[in-house]
Length: 70
Image (cartoon, rainbow, N blue to C red; front, side, top):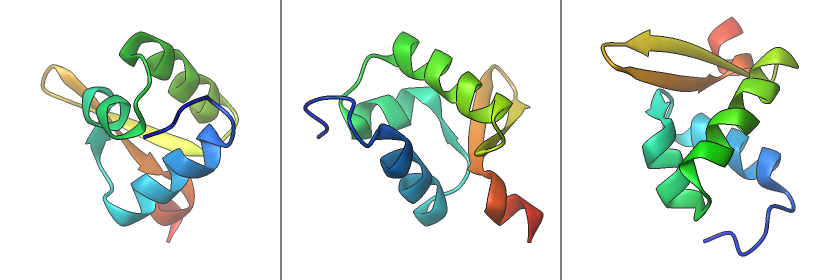
């Protein structure tokens, strides 16, 4: 679990490389961070091109942007 938010981007990208298509709820649990905070953080990462998202039903799932481009 992440005790602080240092290196959060790298941890998110690694998790999405290992298991693409994860919802915020699952990522937040694995990282030990607040779900609402993580949703905003993921939006910022998407705006910067690090991750991509897709809405599937009520959930928004995230992918590593580089793996989507392959």
